[in-house]
Image (cartoon, rainbow over all chains, first blue to last red; front, side):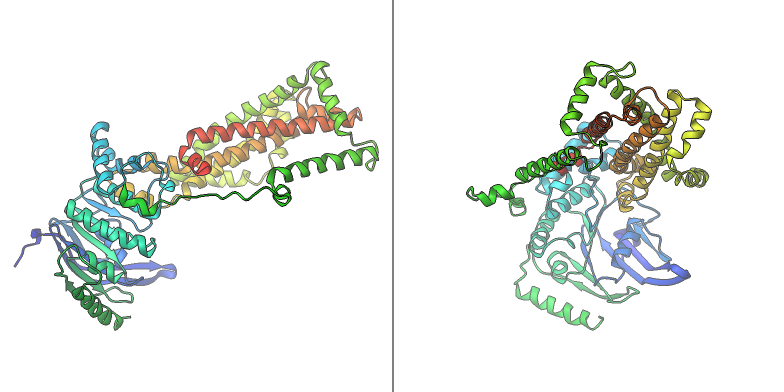
Length: 256
Length: 279
C-alpha cells in the first residue's frame, strides 16, 4: 500500500457544485478520486461538459472543491502557485509581450535576474522548437506556435506538475496530430508529471501512460481507467492502438 | 526550425496585365474621381448661386486663406488663430486626460472607489459638455480659463469611461496566468491591467480629442477674440462666406493633424498593435 506522499497529485472524493442564476445548484463533479505518480503522463478523457476542465482548475487551485480535496506532494492545494504549470485551451498569451517576454514571465515574477531568466526562457523556446521567433508577438504566430509558447511558458517555471487543459482543442486536425507528436517528444526530453485533459480518444491513447475516462453527462463521474502499455513512440495505425481505441469508444458510447 | 515549417504560410500576389478595367478599378483612380467630383459640384453650386451668395467658390476660399497669412484679422494671422485654438485644446485635453484616466483605472481596480465615484460620474456623464458654457463663463469670466474648463469637461468623460472599460473587459483568464506563474495582485495590475487597458485608453484619447475640438469651437463661438471658431463667427457677422468656409477647412485639417499625433503616440507606446496593423 502506497502512502499519500508517493503520489505527486492525489484527488480524494472531489465534488464541485456551481450556483447558477436563481440560486440553482449545478453539480459538475461527483466524487472524483485519482492519483498521478512522479513523471507519469495521465490523461483525463471526457466529452464536452463532463467537468474535466473544472477538475483541472481545482488541482490548479483556481477553483475550490465543494467537498473533497486535492493534494500535491501530500500538501493540500489551497490556491494557484508556480509549482503547477497550467497550459490553457485558448493559449492566454500576453499580446503585448513578445515570445521571450511571455516565456520569461514566470521566472521574472519569482524574482530571477534578467540574465538568468533569459537563459531559462531561451532553453525552453528551443525545446518547443521556436528558436528564431523570440522577438515575435503572439498575433504573428499560428495557433500551433502560440500553444508552443504556452507550453514553454509553463515549463519555464520548472513546475512539479504540468496541467494541460485541452491544449490543442483549437487546432486543425493536422496541426493537432503534429503537436501531439511534439508533446510526446518534449515530455521524453524533459520528463514531468503531466495531467492532460482532452476530449479526443486518439490524443489520449497517443500520449497517456494512463487514461481516466469520465461519464458523458454532468455531473462528471469516474467511468473507467485504462493503462496504456504501448511502446513509445506510438503509431496511430498500430494494431494494439486501434484495439484500445475500439474498446474505449465502445465503452464511452454507452455513457453518452 | 524545420519542425514548424508546415505552420508558416507564404503569400504570393499575382499581378494581372494592365488593362482599362484595371485602371478603372484602381483605388487611387477612384479616390481622384471622387475628389474632383466633390470640388466640381461645390464650384458648380457656388457659381450658379443655388444657395444665394452664402457659398464661396473653392478658389475664393484658397485666396482668402492665402490672404490671411499676410494680413492679420483681429490682430492675428492665420497661424496665430490656429495656435490660439490648438493651445486651448492642448491645455484642456492634457488636464482632462491626466485627471480622468487614472481615476477610471482606479474605479475599475477598486470597488470601493468605484462605489463612491460612479454615482456622481453617472449623474454628470449624460450632460453635453457645451451645457457647461454659461456656468463656466459665470465662474471663470470670458477669458481663457472658461474655454479650457469646457474642454476639460468634454475630455473627462470619454477618457474615464475608456480607461474604466479597458480594465473591466480584460479576459479574466489572463489573471489566472499571472497567479499560476507565481504573481500577486501587484503583478496582475502591472503585467495585465495596464498593458491590456492601453489600447482602450488610447481610443478614449482619440474620442476626447474630437470632443475637445467640438468644445473649443463652441466656446469660441460664444465669446472669443481669437481662434478658428472666432474666424467662422466673424465670417458670419461680416457676411463673408469665404472666411467661414476657409475657417471650416482649416479646422478640419488641424483637427486631423492632432488626431495623427495621438495615433503616432499610440504606435510608439503599443508596439504589439503597430505590428498588427502592418502585418
